[in-house]
Length: 442
Image (cartoon, rainbow, N blue to C red; front, side, top):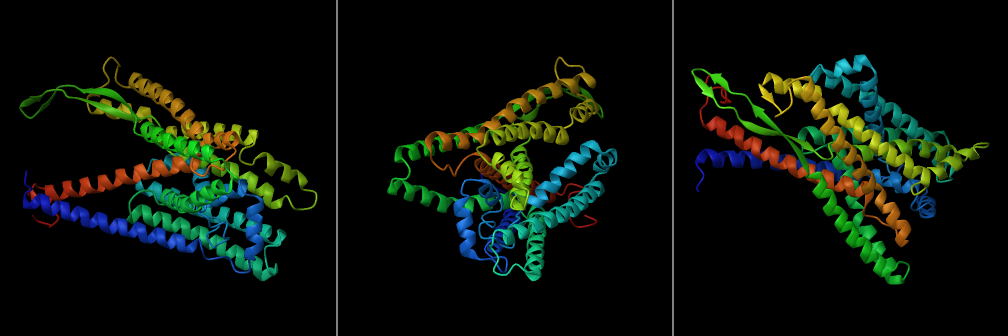
């Protein structure tokens, strides 16, 4: 069926806007990747490479994953998005506990801007602490050519400014591009490391360091894991909602039936990121300051909290489950949904409107979140078990795989949403309906 001129114009306008947004995302990610290759002045690259070789598979690898390889090169963006993520976690926790911040969140756009401003201040403070600790660690590990005052000043300044730049860049991508900016920056950093990781795995298999059969099995399991993540992330629990008969003018409109969609994993990838960042904070502090005299216990703490250790696995799983329930409760209020349904004359069949509907929705969300949190924990911990069982370094899996799949699916969904919304707005304008024309007076 041929489209009319209004539809074609709507499609062209939508494609033009989407093209500009995607171009902005591409340029922003390119700038970010260039920034991860600009080193901090005064760092000895040979000693830095030796340090990462010695601690491969440990805590530094986790940091390096979130920074997109910037930490391994000790670039000006070495802290990556971690200060901003940590500040966001703290602000979300404070919104749940502090009445003033809870009320501020309900004030709409003005309240959200205020919370964003507080998050930025928190990012600056955390970046100062982490940047100072990182610079001191570089000096203690003999990675600096000349560990004098100038080195400390330049080192702290560059990494703090780099962390603020990452925060600003992520906000710009969210506002002017497509998708969540910080998630896309993490996604870009993880994907950028895949070619080198795959090449190293095949080279190790060629030299006999890794069993080729085990490598093939790991690859097949990774593909199955991706399929499972996509399947669960697309899963929904649909609650049937009926609308009562209502009168519009002189006509009686027949009641309609629809559904309330609830995702199986409502929290997405946020619990994995939050749990990882919270575990990295104490472990990194222990490792950074463990070289000081009389602080050997900090080295033991850093070792216990390293990826793959029993305490790390237990705390990581507990953190994922906690943040799954916490983030879902923060973003989805069953009482508010039930009140909105009651105001619209809608009801769940067999459930009384109001409090009973809120309780029913809350019970459904609790069951979904229980399953979703266990699913996220298993996906994030599976590569650790695979690495231990097959004795191979698993690069694709866990938190990285979950981030890649969820961010990619969210990105594609927002691309489709931008196309549909732009076409709808253009068609409404072409239909000459009152209130849809962009030109005043029409």
